[in-house]
Image (cartoon, rainbow over all chains, first blue to last red; front, side):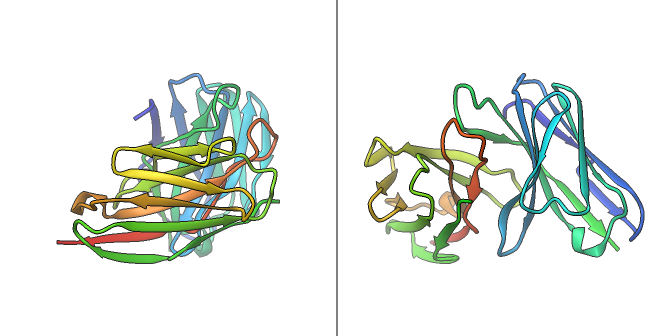
Amino acid sequence: DAGITQSPRHKVTETGTPVTLRCHQTENHRYMYWYRQDPGHGLRLIHYSYGVKDTDKGEVSDGYSVSRSKTEDFLLTLESATSSQTSVYFCATGDRASTDTQYFGPGTRLTVL
Amino acid sequence: GENVEQHPSTLSVQEGDSAVIKCTYSDSASNYFPWYKQELGKRPQLIIDIRSNVGEKKDQRIAVTLNKTAKHFSLHITETQPEDSAVYFCAAIISGSARQLTFGSGTQLTVLP
């Protein structure tokens, strides 16, 4: 499965605390994405990156920020977690230059109490 | 932006029967349509894709058809097996554009033995 890892894989936190999720890839893909998956909503794009320090918002970006200081790492931060951010978060990578295919990481299950 | 609708949300079939999942898209400029399969607790994985210059594509028991005029595309699974039970997502994108993949809301397929 494309060399994409996510950490942590599971996290339980309390409302109001900051949370950072990490995505690491060894594929040297230019594009990286953060999605959240909730029942009935499929995969919704939070933020994406098209290069080091180049990021843009997706359809559900409120309450989230991202950073990409190296090609291989893409961080998703919840500055002050809320219960509505309880979800499964997937990172994905892709090389839009040659294909639009996206490869997904194993996911992080986040529970905000 | 693009909007992708997917039907049905759940589908149960008897083992050996065929299954069909349909998606419609709103942006006539979309030209790349992948399908992802997500087994329980696992990451989404690409199973087949089609580009707008092709009307049909097959890979063993799975096939995808595209009707550009009607702006819909379908996934066909023949001779279903229990291991086909999963959530299937369709998606659409304008290849090479600045836009990102838009996913349908998913179809839970259950193959009954």
